[in-house]
Image (cartoon, rainbow, N blue to C red; front, side):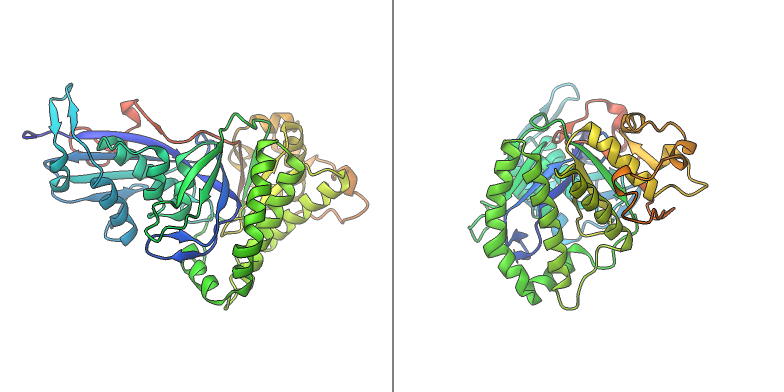
Length: 418
């Protein structure tokens, strides 16, 4: 093991959005939930965390940089993940660099970690989910751990609950488990991202500010004070999980949309039932719900599902590209960009949806007619500037290693940020 060397691994992991929500822990330390949950993994091309992990005998302590700024690794959640992965490390031999690390050496070696989110941190877009999933996946590869994705998900869960669901692509279920030690609380893949590839996802980033009540403290208060949560976890969610699994298997959009919207609304009702009440959605969130609900009702068949995590941002899942382009027209009609905002930075991700919607320049947005079915019902209010930007995306794959050295976030010579 002697000599001056740096061994590095870089990985990329997607974020996910729950369609049956996780809210409330039965064990705070191990992050064990009060109910099962189901999520859709989002395409990492548009929303992901990239993490480089490095090991070297020349490092004198574990260090981490998030989005370019050094952060402390002293927190219990980081320590849990590092401890669990180190205990599973195996022998590593890198013939190309002449590096040999014995299993027993890992406990004396220090790590450098650099992580970058290509979306706002702590704004209700599951950045901690992608972050901890990426950390655990990258460390497992660095240390040659033999665990499969499901076993790794139980480790990522100890960093951030929903992180366990980011170890797979497509549609993922987090099984709450029964064991007190949490070993059976892990993620399984229900279907991969190709299973239902008609779906298109549009995210309205209403605010990229950090939220007032963190998910961790919010959940704790809900568990302590909400009777509705107890009823939800015991009576409602188990039935919804079965129905949602069936809807995904059969690609039954009407059932999928109804369950997704209802579960999102009940999650926010549970937040309101908390003492003191927690408000994650704002007026813009409510207006977006209204636009989707009125359109779905006027069509007679759901075109779009909406769901909100612990924040005001709307995640809308359209049944197909045609519905997505009509949705984007409606959203841009009601929530046009500010005069000084460039269309290119207002719609990010898969911009081909913009072409489908017949919008090529900002003047096309101003020229949008009121949505046909609602002309007579609602005054055509415009809420310019109330949405920061939109992300167009789709269901996506799970974590991958990046072999292109130029994508590494740490310098291969020094192990410090580039």
